[in-house]
Length: 289
Length: 289
Picture 1: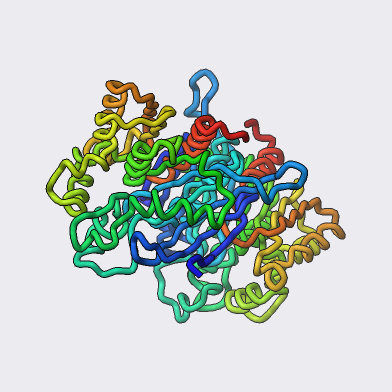
Picture 2: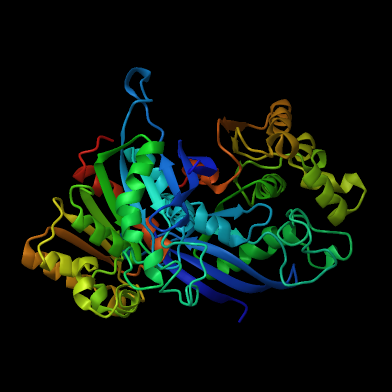
């Protein structure tokens, strides 16, 4: 069977699970975590209740485990009644040339694109994995209501959430991000990744650049929330959230950027503002607490 | 200088720090974490405000890092205005015979006793480290008010919190524990540890056995809170909380034992009930939120 339960543990009333499956898009076994909140159905009819769902995309070097054990989202997922899906950040288990040599390219650094350049193109199809392969798989195993679906993430995963959300506004009706890479075409992390995965022709890069997507007319139907640590070491060189908010302002995409003085790029920052993201998505998705 | 800052990161408005110092009791460098909440002094006079403090003792195999990154206590420490000190679980950096061979003895498993048996007696003085060495060191570096001081912990650290709290009720005015070893003289973990650290003469073990301490007349001035996962794999063989609550009932020590169905021994369990422990200590210590 193409679905293996690695662990299920009770957390804040719900169940935090870790699962493994054979992914056809990335041609390897992928691990992911899924949190299912404790829900109380009307008149005891809890089994048929469909729950809203959030996809959380993680940053460079991470697996599903970092956010699952460190971000404290279970408390708020249970409070607001969200299923939360946390995928891995790249294909795993291969030994492509140089695949494990850099923290910002190859394993742990899939950048949520569909690679077109060999040897990466054979497996590094993380965009399709997230957008096409995961949702039906999640529907098969959990009581999700994809008509109420949001996407968020951190750093490289914030980039993933913004680009995937903007390109698929009907599939992901609500978007937020922690410390996202908002303009990968204009920062070293993004230029390295896109050169490697997509080649030198930069027109193909634009579909994976949140700022370019806004400039090219893509929109989210709700305001986008971005939280950013003011003392984040990557802020000036890699993240540059002002490039995104400027584009949003020019193109009339509502966005809220909050810069929090003193906070860095870590899970201590993410967890401190995690609840606000559930408030944001619950409001956008009209989800009852 | 005998105090080194390894890191300081903003978390939930306060500061999560990790520090290193040369410990005289354990004759080695020890790491610990300290969280300082964001406080608002009256009329801007925040610098002189002394804060209540909680000591959290961790379980087998842990360092300060596990609870600091996974338990989510910073949210509640800031809400209730507590400084939280998380020490390591044993001396580090030595190579005593067999010191690193078992998960339940030696490094990562100090059991919060003063060892009397060589070679452990030279360094494994974790009781004195927690009770005597740490408090003045913490006072030197942080604005703590030890007149409002509680102690709590998990598993082996729950054992430590119960025994240290019961033996020093004026120093630790409030006690709680997650999944504690309550009767180490009556379980394999405790028997192995006490035999190794304290020798075969069992009268010397009683001072480190919470149930024996209650039976021998020790008391805490406030009710003790114990949370326990009902699906904890260690419950029947190692933890046995009913031995402690029976002794408390017979000896009129107020205690609340809550067994939570479905929860295991992990940080998912601890974090799920962490806020209740802050409520407990804040009430016992008459701390204003």
